[in-house]
Image 1 (spheres, rainbow, N blue to C red):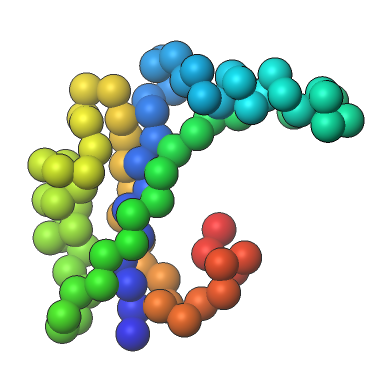
Image 2 (cartoon, rainbow, N blue to C red; image 1 turned 90 degrees about the vertical axis):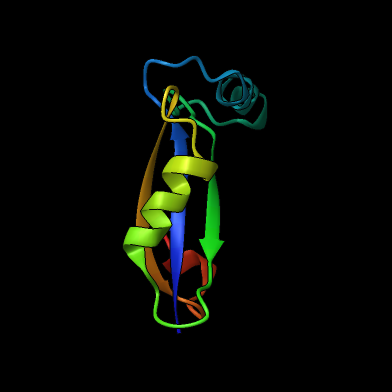
Length: 87
């Protein structure tokens, strides 16, 4: 059954201290070719019936994301899809 996924990210103009901390730590791991890192969150919603993208957008806009500082995207994935195929 399809699942609705909401990805929430800080707007590009908003400072991302978590992302900066990760970016600053990467050279200590020998990774020197990453210009920047942004940290976000992924929310998966399973509806009892058919997935409702409009309802998911409403949920994201009113509850899951702060529209002043965050953007979000809403899309469908198969619930049993492997994690590496979800990107």
